[in-house]
Figure 1 (tube, one colour):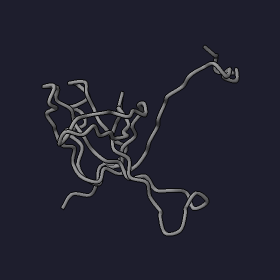
Figure 2: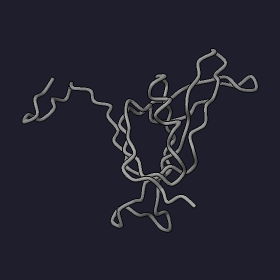
Figure 3: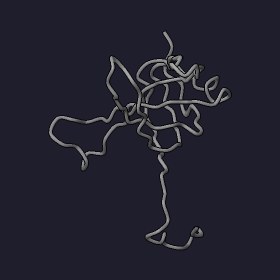
Length: 120
């Protein structure tokens, strides 16, 4: 493990994600075939001008919350809220229609609302 002032060694593995963006729609609770419940949501992150490719100006990132306390927190967020989340990039495999499928997502470890969206 490295300290704050050291450069990570080639053998140090790091899977850390930090996102700041807007919630596209309110989080949705889903029940998995295993019986586990999760909250799923999307964060829309504006790309800096230097990182834009063609007409794509945003990235839409799928996110999941698994822990009950975090699920309650995320459940209180609304579409348009500016949020900051931290977590890890995951690829989750599942069965559907007799096929094995996968999805890439950020498994959220923590998050907070930076600014609430304007309410009508």
